[in-house]
Length: 310
Image 1 (cartoon, rainbow, N blue to C red):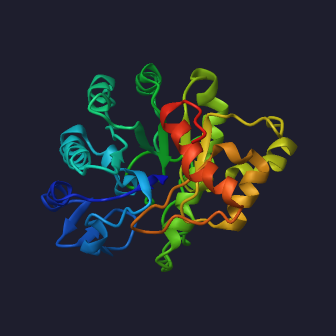
Image 2 (tube, one colour):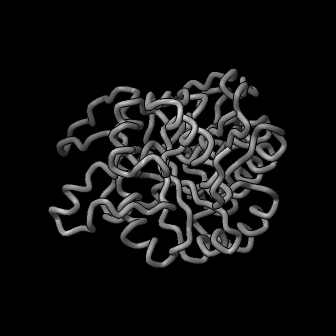
């Protein structure tokens, strides 16, 4: 039995809340309309309860690229509440990451939401979490999950620590229409850049302020850990200093990338994630002991903070 820390499943309450809107993000039937991305035809079957054979726990989360967390509170909270209610009602083996509003952070409301039984808090990589939100997590010994945020520039704040923005399309000369990009562009360019930036920001800025916080970065943190040699060359921290409470999950990567990350960070901080229904959990290809660490031992430690070997 294994743990999957990264899935998405839209319940009927959440779908209804998206359909009740007429500005992005919203659903027109099953057509998802976002700022910065082309309309996306959602397959309803993707959000039916799926096969969970072999899973002791599957953690679902709000789809942060929708930009919900950056909406004004009066628009944000009805969507988050619908997601929360639906996610908590899924039943075993599902668990869920909480979400919260970033346009006007409310640590008291986050505390009440977490106390309903969520595994921790997910935030978009395009958010800069304030100390008050992170202190709610550490006071409960719960982890943070950093997930890609909106691809387009119209929602949310720029990725940290710099103040540029990885938009869904490359810039075009003045007076010319931006060139069309393939459907995979947001997942391969802005999402990866966001995760890369968040990895370095958390190390440089957040960790000194929150030394006990456990953090998991989606999609192997955009492979940011593999840039340690360049980091050192540019005056950054020393290579080989692994933070045991900074985890990375494996969604949309495979044996070559996982092997490279393990060589850089070690096996103990790599956790299994699929990003279902958009991808499947990869097979690490590193042997039975590594599989057990990535799929069972490490995600349990991320969630509970306790070491287990069964």
